[in-house]
Amino acid sequence: MGNARVCARRRVGWVRLVAVGGALAGAGAVAVTYLTANELTYRFVVPLGSADPSDRPVVSAGGWLAGVGWSVTAAAAGFVLGLAWRRATSSTVTPVTGPTATTGAAGRGRYLVAAAVLVGLFAFPKFVRVGAELATVRFLPATAVSLPVGQPVTVDLPAGRSAIFRTYGRQLSTQECRVVGPTGAELPVTAPSVAFSDNSDSVVTVLLGTVEVPSSSSVSVTCQGMPGHRYQIGPAPTVDGPLGPLLYVPSGVLWSVGALPGLTLAAWLAVERRRGQSSARQR
Image 1 (cartoon, rainbow, N blue to C red):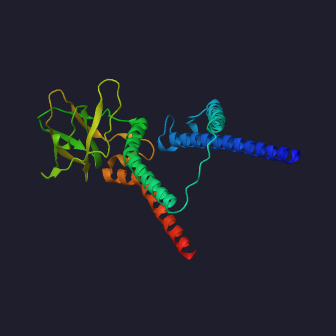
Image 2: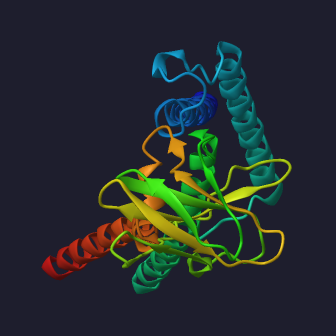
Image 3: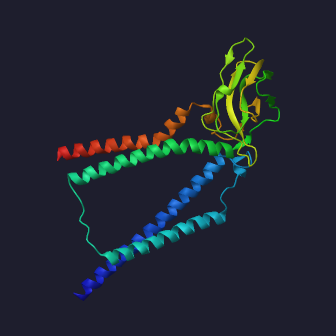
């Protein structure tokens, strides 16, 4: 009888030891994954510093050790607190099975999908805006031409995309500036997909909109704005990395990309639910 108790205690001790080791290993893996994703993001998606990706160290060796160490320590503390709480409460929880459990899982799945979609819809455009501002090599070009308010100005523009800049204000509208091409036809001013500025600490300059010119030509630009607003036109901002082109796509594209993880999760849950229903029918 005594030997059986000793063996049972040893078995429980080994189980707890394995659980602790798994929790610590999992915490370390999560920390490494996070730091790796951070490193790759600031090397290739939101480039900082040198144009050469190999010359963009973001996380130092000390940072790696500290990140993994804090994660493992937090996991150990959480495991100990959870074990203490379990001993203090020591209540028996009866698992829920049957249709109620299935319905509860489906409900949680719907909440998870809704949360993932909403977070993606709001977070991805913010990520594009902040990331593009951090990766901006040049915002307002030195060759930009000033546009006096209310006065038409003739400007020579190269073929391609040119940008209209304005000092920050409460309201931005592409209707503030009118661009007329050499043929007399009005060229549309397209707003960026997100609010994009130079992120200045003093007078903030924003990208009001862009104009596509088919070929190098002279255009007439007239801007009507509030007193104190300053307008300029010149080459579009230079943004390093893949976020630059996303500034000029329709906003719906960013929302679609942001919602994609949640929609993918919804599709996966639907497939799993159908598989579960098929298995239940076969039984």
